[in-house]
Image (tube, rainbow, N blue to C red; front, side, top):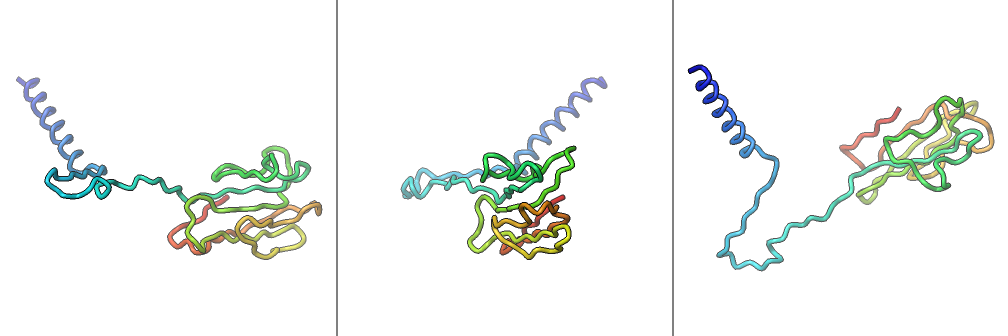
Length: 155
């Protein structure tokens, strides 16, 4: 008797869960009446994919030069820039925004270089740092331009 009651309760719970999943589904359903006098082009959905906004960067590392190779290529966030366990300094960096970037939007960044201090802000892929001076980047400030509602996280 208990087994049948348990099966009945479990069955009803399963039905309830399925009903809720249909009601609160994140999918969007659309239907067009057969009697509508609309052309088929008016019933299409725009399926163009927009690319999310992202970040890419490259740098200059002591004894290695420009990374990544080949020269001019970029690392895509959130991957690391630099080396591990080699005690080599990062001497310069270039940062760019990628994806579906609105007109007028960009990125500004400023580096603090050993024995020189803050070097002044650069934007949108310009080089920040030094080359051939054997001086490390000690800090960086990154700001988004014209991208309200977006944040930059780095470590």
